[in-house]
Amino acid sequence: MPGKRILLVEDDEDVTTILARCLEVQGYELCLAENAATVYSLLAEKPPDLVLLDAMLPFVSGYEICAQIKQNARTAGIPVIMLSARSQSFEIEKGLRAGASLYITKPFEIADLLTAVKKFLPLAPA
Image (cartoon, one colour):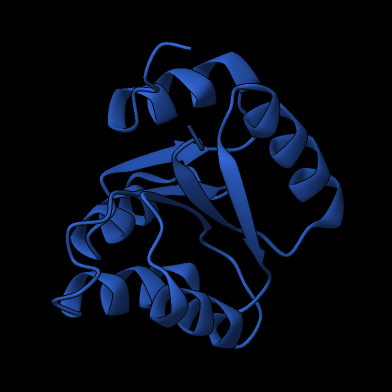
């Protein structure tokens, strides 16, 4: 049985590599995107079960992408976990107002991120 599908939107290659490895080991299927155009294309093809979304992306911010996901009837129900180095309370509030289910500040512990993902996507027992 295939794992739940996660769309990871991150423009830092090192962060992408680390998160992808950790999530795949946990049994999740990963889709990767670095920018808004790729995100929208992947969402149109096959919506994921969860989106991990960096807030600071080139050209179109993660906040804007999150708002677009939540405004689209086909994708509005997908949980979005925003990841950001911006830890000010107004930035966190901005992410939550855009529709994020959770806002996690960088740097974070991988275990904490996995706990958050499992909260939204419990895997079926093997």
